[in-house]
Image (cartoon, rainbow, N blue to C red):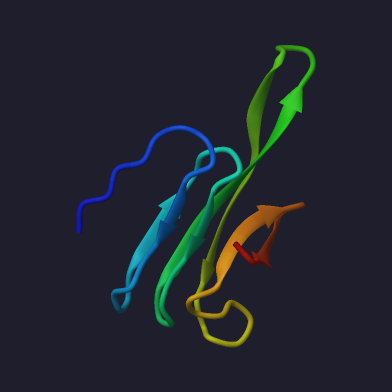
Length: 85
C-alpha cells in the first residue's frame, strides 16, 4: 500500500491484515485490524517558542482486547483513547 498524509488532523484506517500504521500529525487518529500495529503522536503548545511540539509518540499492538480492531484511536496523556467519529 502507498499512503501519504501531511498536516494536522490526519485520519488513517487500515483494512488489511498485519499492517503497521503511523499517523504522527497533530490531532491525528488511526484504526487497524487485529494483528496490526498503530503509532500515534501527541502534541502540546509550547509558549516559549509559540508553536505546538510533539511530546509523546507511542505504538500499540491491535490485540482485539486492549486495543480493539476497527476502532479509531487518538493519543491523549500518553495513552491510546478510543473515539467515535
